[in-house]
Image 1 (cartoon, rainbow, N blue to C red):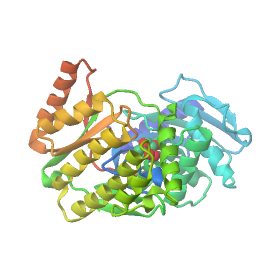
Image 2: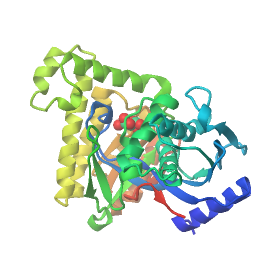
Image 3: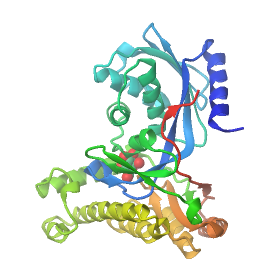
Image 4: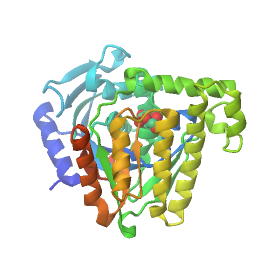
Length: 382
Ligand code: GLA
């Protein structure tokens, strides 16, 4: 049994063994794949992520002495003990900075939160957003904060930006807290308005494969921050609040005014926002199979204009499409990571094999393949 109830029971038992008491509850928050709308969130733009079934599961019990005692099944076996009142960006390192960062971010908002015992387990997922969002929903309940889902996402993003030092946008956190089973999430990163867009893969004879290249990517390494800064500089030169405010019709004029290093970034962001709009139209019309060409066009834009793909993600896209995928693209920040491929169900196995064979022929490591089904957002599971 690996369903949420069994996971909750297992994490509860581990919590009791480690902390010597019962938890107040068990919560789970998912990782995500983004269907389309990449590097748009920090430009106030649009994205279309969906939650994965893989979650970070967290058992937590409130403490009244102001101590945060953190334990992770993926850690070194020790409990990290921190005084909540003393939390500040800098000294906390490793995985503990994400949960500690969320508690710090809640206090920065002036919310009356204190300590907790925590045990967490992330199987098959290394998503800092899932970890942050699991802590955020748990604390919301432990301390009766009653924050809205977008507020929880902003707290989690602030923890990652200001405590962990990673300048990410808000998409991953919004996906983790707002997604619902069976739908993709149409996200407006400016207003944080969301719309659930039904995404019925099986009903249309489709599968969504996630091809993990296993090439490491680290958003803290400076490339992501440099891209983000480039977009902000371009918006400034164009007299805009954010690149979200530039339409496709205005794009040619804007490109003519921009320096050569910024024009391709702007072209990607504007065309990508437009692709999100088209993808939502197609899903709303009940035609998920017609997403394919938009995905592949999105990849070309990330490869040629935004320049965040790498040989492994380019090869995965190329091999998947050649083997019968309707469309494929890298997903997430880039510089490695995963590719998604939309495939007819009957071609799923042969597409996965073709990508694996192409990697072997190119001398790349074996990719991990999993199937993505649109799953539920962060919630209490026990
Ligand atoms: C990372 C960030 C997100 C987003 C994507 C690119 O996943 O965490 O906020 O910017 O990259 O779309």
